[in-house]
View 1 (cartoon, rainbow, N blue to C red):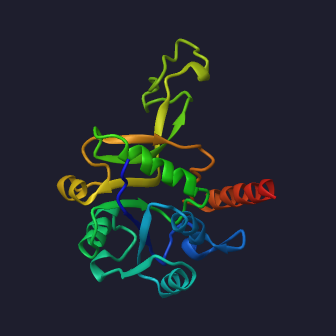
View 2: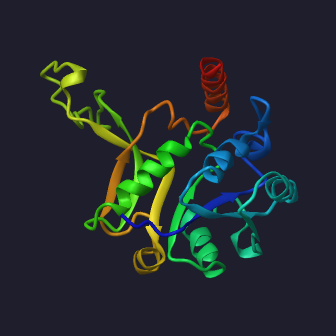
Length: 226
């Protein structure tokens, strides 16, 4: 199986609404974004890491601590908290050569190199799907707003382990080609393959409770590795 070089896209802005300075906030001894950067840097398939940022401190920390880095200064029309991911991806692709990309976030500090490489290998081992995205499987009883069951019949008390799984798009990573993104204008393509990963590894930092949870998980992981 031949796997081409893949460029990682890691958008990072300086301002964060719910966790102040989230990307560079110290997390178990290093800036938060360093954890995922290390995982990407150690991948045998990632050739470049494209960091799109509006923050000088993030840019300096990335370029001085990691190889494979290419910095993109975020243009004015992409500044602000309301900008969605697709315009950022489109801009990055317009400034970058290459055909294959993996987009991730700096707020997934438990994500491992092993998972990244395994997902890449899974994607390139098949031909049916034009993109891949990470998900987390859950077997819990979900309800619509009107009280009807999403994945179960409320009148039948089915054991949770026997429920059909529901998959959460956990935003850890997306794999796609330039052609797929330009054609569909989405990182999910037109027929994406779901790639389940462990729910602890998929921990994502959106608010301070998430930050404290990720901090606990990282401390536990490092302790167990000793």
